[in-house]
Length: 266
Image 1 (tube, one colour):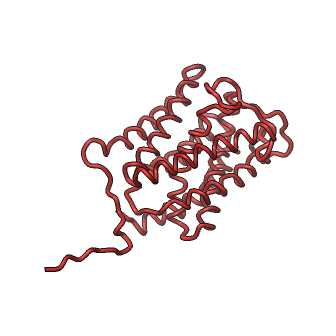
Image 2 (tube, rainbow, N blue to C red; image 1 turned 90 degrees about the vertical axis):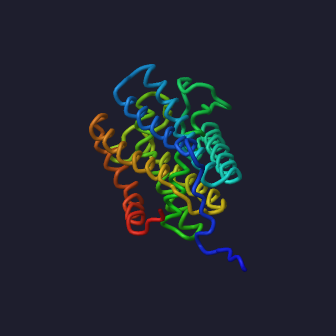
Image 3 (tube, rainbow, N blue to C red; image 1 turned 180 degrees about the vertical axis):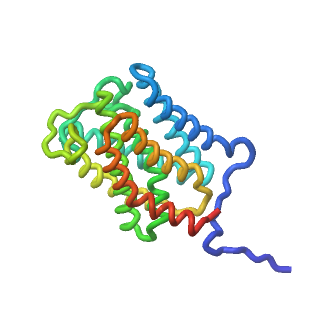
């Protein structure tokens, strides 16, 4: 009798944990969605608290999914890279004004290290995970993944920065050129995001690619895209932000959704 071991293209699939543990990424994702909905409806210290909570829950959704479905080594590498990169690039930015421009954080976001609140690298990390996976679904090369993922992550900041500066979580000391429809935020910031995000995605793509069930990060990416368009257009009455963010993110989101629909993995 002989035993055949399959080593084809899907042999590295990991279906994740069994039992109730499987629900943890979904639970964190659900808490994030609920918290972000409530964030729109409240103000003041409650909104500030929800900002911190939703960053933590989104980060936990990404990290637990990475751990359960891609393994400890992969998850540790992803967390180390994104947290170190997010913190390092923000320290560089606040000290040198490169690559984002002249800005500084308020004390509202809690404990900080060298002037950068701890929540900020967690925000880089939480969003980098679904963005990386989306880019890898569309690209087979490192260059393609870096550019597509970098564009997608930087496009998210078209929504993020207007919201957070509107809450005075950070302030711009010099503005200069801006995008039409997004006043008060320097164009350099978005260009800096694009440069930084491309670099981050290139580094993350060094981690081994694995074909697993990515329903949680996929759902979070789609939620972030749609909810931010609605929030900007309806609740914040910032049509320019909704258009810029919707179009720029949509250049990746639409073909990504088509790929998920036409070439499902699960």
